Length: 424
Image (cartoon, rainbow, N blue to C red):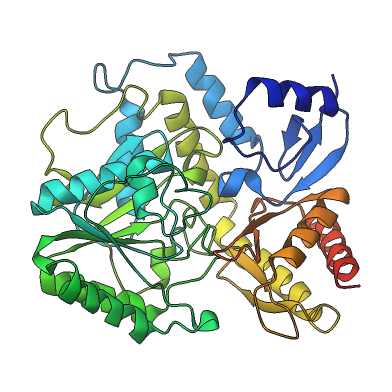
């Protein structure tokens, strides 16, 4: 079995709509490293798109899953419940921002969590409209695509989308959008498109993921909270990519003096097992009638067991602190390369949710071609990187927070070499 043969079989057996970045096929992985079917080693700075904050195959997660395998793999929680679901809900209720009474429901994917957050918001408010932001990503379901503020490749050919979804600009000073611009745009929506009394929720990522790793300014988050309080609108924080120590806090909303009404979480929640959740104010979470929430696989017991272990690992190995240490090392390396790589226009991000943005040094225009070149060169040298951004000109770094120091050193050396070669 080799990569070329598998690529031919993939092209014949699977649709092109499932875009695949790498043309090699994984055989095994451990922590921040993976090996393909031909034995070549790679350092994984993608981590399954922020799913593996605790690394590939963390021994505590493997032990928890194996222990649960010996008991049962499925009952459907809605038919025969199990204690671990309740225990995980209790822990998340305690760990998420805010001291108010909370409740948590589990699902299988991030998009499913977003869908259910909107359902809950509509049930709680009796309203139907939702406001999201340009550059935001909320999934590939019909509602997820409607909320997502990026057309290519997510929306092309799939409309029409659910009604009463509105978008406002997201504040990105680098691209000329201030906090005042963004808030004024929401007010314009209230004047031109939708009565605020019809708006159930405003949803945003505290740090945009696919949109380019732009963090919401504190003033923006406070202004949104005030708007929501004024008009009886619910504030939904989509923490699917930002959660579980990635930003140097367990949740990104802990960087703000603002508490959301609902939160969506997924990705690193279960360390590679399919699990997501909606957590929110108890009265809001109780708005849907019994049977209105759930799913056959929602809260799978193997995934629940893994998630309980993830929380333990984050606490025991102090991964929030580790995220800050690793993020600072990466930012120091990237800032030190700016003179040699003038295409670097910005280095940003809290904790270990770091982005490097590229622009043409002469014109200041976003440089997607250079970004792709850096990604390709790094991959050739054995480092897996992800790109993002509305202009496809951002490299985002999502390495496991458990990465060993010597592997991090090796990765930074590869990255530096790829950047210098691309600039040359």
